[in-house]
Image 1 (cartoon, rainbow, N blue to C red):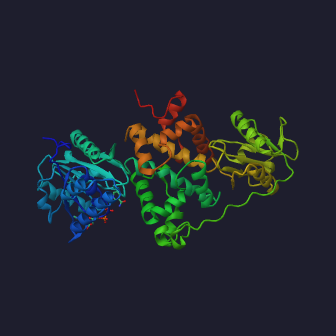
Image 2: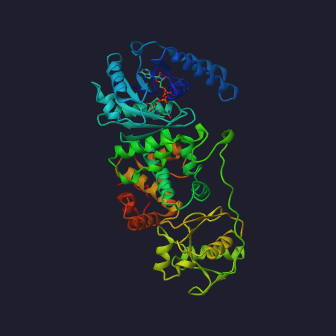
Image 3: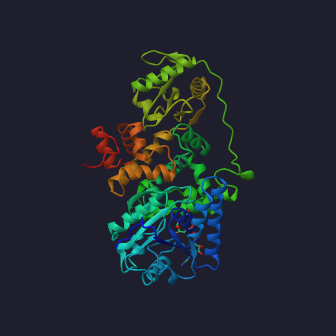
Length: 508
Ligand SMILES: NC(=O)c1ccc[n+]([C@@H]2O[C@H](COP(=O)([O-])OP(=O)(O)OC[C@H]3O[C@@H](n4cnc5c(N)ncnc54)[C@H](O)[C@@H]3O)[C@@H](O)[C@H]2O)c1
């Protein structure tokens, strides 16, 4: 009889009661499920059970739970001393050390204890669920059940189906997740599942920009927060997750996808990891954290306006209008001629291209050319880019004009795709390829990324908001500029952009 996750007498076993196991035990007990807790380390399961009880009491203190529900939840926790005591379990969730051989050994032992149709789920982040299941006589009842830390707050769980997982096992885990108050997303067992796969673009592209000497980390963090709407910039995030985790995840996923260029890591994080600059937890990463607070450089003040008028390229009519309206409203001096006057600043608005190529393509003087990123909202921060030969007073005149209404301006060196265009296009492209590979449905990709990574949109929704055709143009332009297959557009994106349909459109 396949497991019915809604049964009132359902029994869940949690093995490994560390950071993840105890969180899973907590949400299960609160979901009305009896929980057996086991840990190989003496006393660890008792300590975890006491921890969960304290967390449940805290919910009562905060008025989120009444006394009787709390008492019942605590009564559902039972510590057991050995794997043999887990026989009554309908579902086992394993959250032990991240080692394939140890997990396989445990699953083999579990099979000799639990009944043949009990579900065996693993919380592994980086191992192949299929390889864990391969150790079992009944691999059809093995699946990934990947939670996020801290479990009670991160309401997402990825249900990963291994090559031989039966539908009934995945369906039962989906129902179980819902019963525990979590949102399940289904995916095929593949490196990084949905969330850690979709998250490969943000940091790796930011590291490429850093590696090209285009700007400083703080510039990227500010631009990604204030123009693209991310809660944290890429380097703030790397400092939070710490390089001993994030660099290793970058390398692991890159290798598991056989050196897929879209996921290529950077030597910068490898060196910083070797130097011990792990991030916030050691007091220093890309930023220093005296007394736990990030020490970030102050905003560079805008220069005072020079005497050059601003001529705005008409190559993109929408951008021309938006920038003209913005600068006129701010009272900047504009050159409205059909071609720029001899002393005017030439302001261009490329998509995916650098300022130098844009100036040469449009027959403009590269010494007087600067580029503005108009893909994102211009109301909170603006990104201005120079060519290698832009005159300093031209750059300053453009900076002053763009900052005249009080909006801060980030000035960067030449980059095909500025900062936000190239990072967001990379994220959209990877999301599209997850859909193309049928790792998950568009809906689950969006849900997974929003809940698991906290991005302002899922990758497909991000692409739809900015326009699939424009994302495709950025990627194709970058690919031809750099000659790097990293930027090759996913067929999923290409076809939907050509058809003019949403990136969430599934195959009919
Ligand atoms: N920490 C995270 O952010 C996170 C997120 C998602 C998934 N995971 C995965 O969850 C699993 C557990 O991670 P964690 O952070 O909770 O680790 P942890 O170190 O906090 O806890 C692991 C626990 O497992 C116990 N253990 C080790 N080997 C055991 C065995 N053979 N039998 C029984 N107990 C054993 C340890 O004593 C320890 O209490 C790993 O597979 C990890 O990849 C972790």
